[in-house]
Length: 68
Image 1: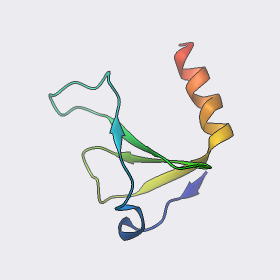
Image 2: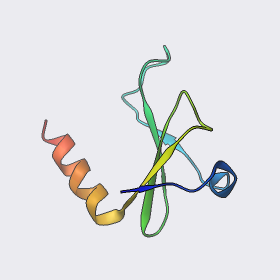
Image 3: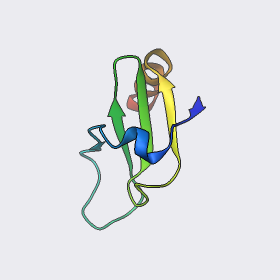
Image 4: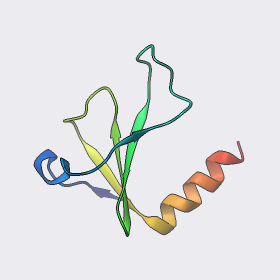
């Protein structure tokens, strides 16, 4: 896991919010998928801190979360 680049470096990303997210503004994250990296941010603070993960660790996390 790495601290992601500054906001100006990630403005060209296409961010996606979970289909499980409601419209009431609760806790949610958004992801932007790049060829080898998945970037994650808080949907309520789009200019705030971001995390980035390699595609393999991200896939392992998604598999784990899907099994909960």
